[in-house]
Each structure stands twice: as C-alpha cells, then as structure tokens.
Image (cartoon, rainbow, N blue to C red; front, side, top):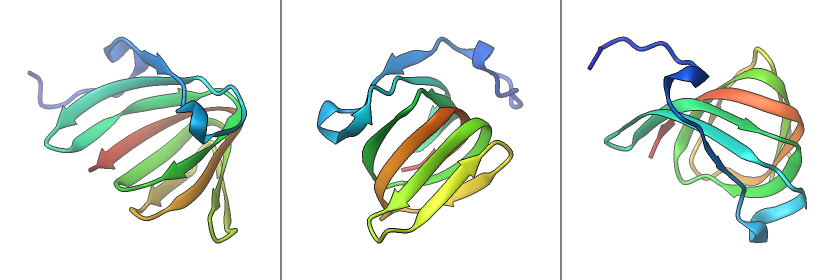
Length: 113
C-alpha cells in the first residue's frame, strides 16, 4: 500500500446508485461514487450527481470541494447555500434539508462518521 495516493476517478471502479425514492423531491438523480478510502469511519473519494432534489439529514461530518457543476443546499431553517466549482465547504452533523443538483456536480469529499 502506498502512503500517498492521487485522488482520481481512474483509481477505482465507480458505484452507481440513486437516492432512496422516499427522499426524492424531484427529478431522477443518479449518483456515481468513487470511494477511494474507507478506514475507521473515514471515507474519501469523488462523487457525482445528475440533476434532481432529495432530502438529506447529516449524522456525519463532511468536507466537500466542488470540482464541476452547481448544487444548492437548502436547510430546514430556509438557509440557502450555493456550491459551485472551486468552492470548499464543511457540512456538520445535524444539517437537515435538501440537496439540489442544478448542473451535474462532481465533488471531492472526506466524511468522518
């Protein structure tokens, strides 16, 4: 095992899925995940989604860096956060609301469960 690894979509086969239909608000979003690391509750890799809106509820901590596209997180309190290419964000446990992919979005992520 190498101790330094470049984060690319070529590093592992993708997993393709969709959000739970009960959480989908609109559209038919398709998620593609390249999970490059999974150790002791730490996950990191790349994630892409096609347009749609679904409900989210975070029990974990997530750092995201948007590589492409445009998404909108709307909190249960009505707060609106636009995530665009070049942006980096932390989503803390307890965030509830919706994730809307306006333009197909590709992000790097690190999740600590």
